[in-house]
Every structure is written in C-alpha cells, then in structure tokens.
Image (cartoon, rainbow, N blue to C red):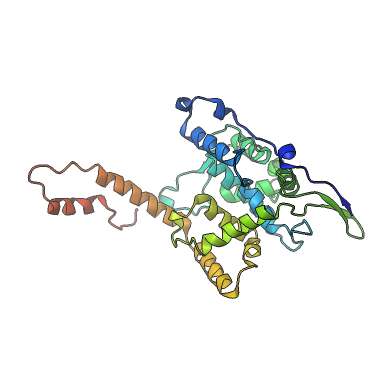
Length: 315
C-alpha cells in the first residue's frame, strides 16, 4: 500500500471566489446577494469548520472511514450525487422550477429553469449550469438527473454526462484536508481510495444529521433549514443516510428512521403550493385598509375569510 501524504488545509484548500463579491452591495441582484452570502459563509477563513457542499456531504456519509471508498453494492449514490448538483445550484440561486400551473405536476415532472447564469466557482456546478443554460426547450428534474448520470437513451444528450463525479469530489475533499489519497491493491487491480483524515469533520456532519431528526426535530418541513432538509432527502435517496444513524442506540435509531419516513412520505410539491397560497393570502390580509372610525373588530373578522381560500378545486 502506498500512502500519499495529505495536503494541509492551508496548502490545499482552494479558495473559490466569485466576481459578485467585488461588486458594490447596491449593484447586487437578489440571486447575486444570495450567492455572495453563500460564498462568504462557505469559505470564511476564520470559520472553525470545513464547509462542504451537498455533494461532498453525501459522499462523506457514504465513504467508509478507513477503507476510503463507498459500498460496491450501492447503486443509488451515482444518481443521488447528480440530484445534489441540482439542489446545490438551486440553493445558490442559479436555477429554479417552473410554475406548476393548474395541472399540479409532481416535483420531478416540473422543468428546470435558469435563474442566474453567473458561475459559482465550483467546477462541477458550473459544468451542470452550462448544460442547463444551453438546453432549449427546458427539461424536467427527472430528465436532468438522467442526463447528468449518462443514463439516457437519447444519444444527443450523452454529452451532458458529468464524468468521474465521485473522484472529483474526493479530490476536493483532499484539498480541504478532510480526506487523503492512497493506492490499494485488490488482487487483480490497483484502486485509488480516499480514507478520512479529519475525523472531526466527519463526526460533525454525522452529529448534524442526527440532531436534525432527534434533538432539533421541529415536525414541520417548512420550518427546517433548507440545506439540512435537502441533505436528509438526498442522503436517503443515495442510500447513505443509515450510515449516520449507525452509532445511535436502538431507541434513537427507531425514532430517527420513523421521522425520516414521515419526511419522505410527504407530498412536498402539494405542501409547497399550499404554503405559497397561504403566504399569498396573508399578503392580501395585510393589504386590507386600516381600521378607522366605526369599523370594529367584528367587521375585521368578517373581512378576513374573504381573503382566504374557499377550498374549491380549480377547473
């Protein structure tokens, strides 16, 4: 076995900066402000924690600490990492879903729409963003996961495949000082592996996932942190979530898995529409004229229901 020395974080960490950070604050658009805020949070040199993308966090949960590779039997992590790319782009304000309209399509059936084509500074994300920008007409979430995974029957879409994603993400984690690189011999062939070197970073990630469904459980997905909610869903889809729950006691494990099942059984597309409808109605209520003169509290109570949904299905 040949062990390659891990790069120190100060030597190997690639500080990915973006041009929007050099703009004056008053010139930033909404999506640019979100991207700048993410970059400041993601790569703050004074932070005590190593900031990871969703792709890197899911890969970290799947990698065996000492062996340095994911399970050979896991055939879900490939498409799961492509899903991470799409969610990460959305969290950074680069893409969004089109309006569901009257047909109430599922989340996977809705199309991915470009929101901001400014580069993120991450090679994988920018490669996917470039593909989305060049594609007209727009494609659905399900189609993009197939395209980025190279699992499409359309030969014209094979150029959209993101290649060597796990290896590229592992190299990013090596640069951040979380993993190292080794060569292991498996009788018939040599294989590059990436064992965990920063055990504290792995423990923080596992503890964060555990707390989200145990001590910090809020029982409402709309009140959960978007990034944490995304991580739980993506880790579950990639078949690596149980790795974070393995150290738990039997009782805590049962509670954690029960709450994850509650999340995965939700129809988030429908709940999202309901939440958006409620926010719209709240806005209508807030725009009601101010109460003056003889208008009493009883009048207000009669006025509010007129701004609330009637419960009738649209035709």
